[in-house]
Image 1 (cartoon, rainbow, N blue to C red):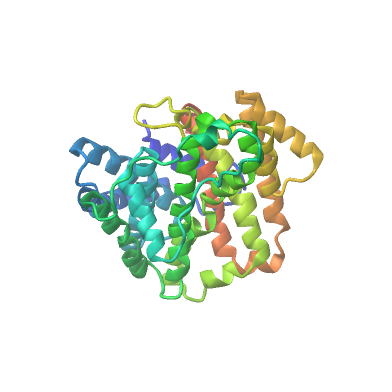
Image 2: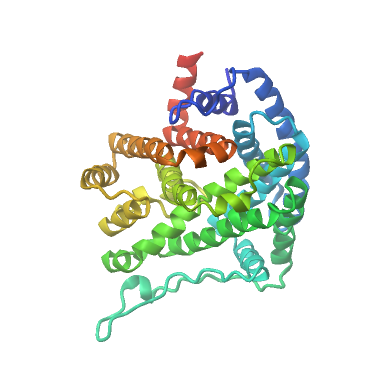
Length: 400
């Protein structure tokens, strides 16, 4: 029986969203062999980072984190970088993704030392950590429950051994980027996805602490900020850029990442449509986990678990969905809390992705064809995550 990674690879290869993300013949066996090689190499590099970066956690936690992270990141790299046989740089990319995942996973699970380490990392690069949210209380009215509740949690001092160990692990991102990509691409990737991802992750962690006290007034005041952090936390440009930078090593004639950033239409498609779509795919698949029903995983913000009208409107507006029919369809789908509703909103964003990608100027699609090919594969992997393990297994069996 195929492993979960093999199932994911084959499901992505069938290209349910775009239909042309994988123009090559289906050489599953070659990709699967490389995936296994990459997983071993990544585990070898990533294991000592986790052991030294989380010295205060038990070995069982180390083992679980390493296994979970290595499977996820090597699967992602293998699914996107189909043409590359540069296992050394693919390993470096996997470790970079692994470090991003490690920071995010730790703060999601309430690791205060990692939260402080992330704040120190942002401060080192002159990025202000998010202070969430600004309390705005109207004169003469009592403060709402969420405003009266402290958003802070007891955190260790910056100089604590656990904090410094985590910071040392995170600082390896810069070093590894230098060996992964060309010199001109490294500063772009450091900010997108690395620092940008951590900044929005911190904001979402703080938001998640407020959710038990969020009421109508909260969403009226903070829906737009919630959406911005939630959508931009996906960091589609940077995630795809990490793999694209590896391609530029072999093909330096490809446009630099800095040039892509300057293309306003393409970046709007990435930051709004693509990010929002992958956020929908991710949140659909993670509703139970984000609700706090899994041991060791505190509640986390999820659009489908908090269908406040203000939040839905802000999300659709940020995704550039403006026509009344689509707004009504999406609102009904999100608020229905049903499998049919989930399928409807996923399909709406699949259609939107196809439409907005086709609307990009021909010159843009030609000049950045390699980046857009990798982007499509990244989106395919996000789509497959939304359909769940049971559907994934049945789809794989049907295609066998």
